[in-house]
Image 1 (cartoon, rainbow, N blue to C red):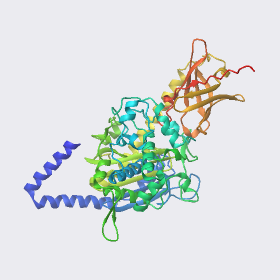
Image 2: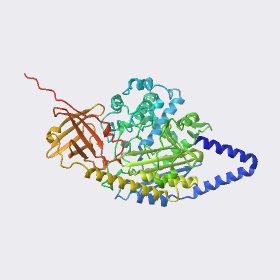
Image 3: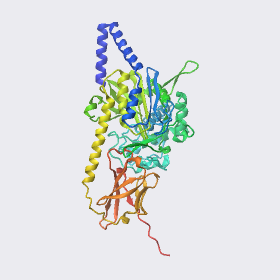
Length: 546
């Protein structure tokens, strides 16, 4: 990407030297034509088509270009089966798009000299501890934001997802029990827990909660008056989008997923109008505007703006489906609160967010002064990708994704889902259906302890055998035998779409040595990190005689 960019600049300079003002006039005219085309584009038909193709009840989008808000609109309904429409003020949970706010808050603290990006975390949180003592000692504030800690993908997310009753401090304390998947700083693996730690540092250095700090230091100066930092703050506001998930491949209204213990990683609930304001500040390098005396007002310095969008951790680039091959980036990396890649030869700073019933995406193209935010009340990554490619091409005046990226993304998603269903059917058909468990079913009942999550319990409730997670009220489901000593747990909350295999290993004497879990479907959200759990039976304390 850099070499291409440099060559383009050199070529442009040479052409300028030979052609003089005529070349400048031509380039200026081309930019003006692209800007005019962007301003004339109406996304209504494309958004409506995406909603229909991907079963999304409601979408809000915001588009800013050259410092102007081109679009801040809502489409569809807030809740399936209800008449209330999504508008530009409708609140959506934006999940991991909150990470940029945490990164910005830290950047402000760096500007103020209250911390440095390369300070050890223990300088600001003395009790912080990772599994490995070396990593604990070497982990910096920068490392918290760059997904290179050695933790596996989504490691430890079951401490907060689905909604748990662990406190934020308990979650941070449990990091010391989560073993690494790779060596420190050797590879990229997306995590949430370290952003929770980053949020704790924001609170510690400001002397207020993460939410209070974000409101006072970012939301209020930017003018994001409708944005809140928790689901609880939405109480009494009727203009709130409702969560929706697929149940047996049919879209359904479901309850939201409050996660007050995961602020820093998630927490922001916002709307199209406010996202337009936020993107304008980001595209202007942290500049909010000027005060009454004409002095520049900034959230953070231009230096910190560059730091947020500087590549920190390389990300391996996968091969897209042939129908979307042209969208493959030349480079991919993570900065500080933003994923970085290229599109149409331009740098893109972006992020996505996912919580139960809500998916969102923010895309920023600094060179084009373009920002796009897409907020949805459904769990459809395809809808985000389809609109991302369509809107980028329209507003950049490019044709990278082809004539119909919406149709291409829909076809790829449908084919992928069909292949996964076929794989699951083949796997089920190949099981040893007549096999029997090694123990009587009651022999699997008991309490099981994992080093970082804690307690899970298997009990008979009437004729059913139920697995429950002690600190996650909604994570409860019935066990049914699959084959040998493997069972399947089907969660009571069917919208989780996260049923899992539960496998027992036995000691030579026939007692249970451990219980392991694994998601059944590859489509299960990675935050259901069942595969990282290592449950062992809790031995009952023998009763002593009187």
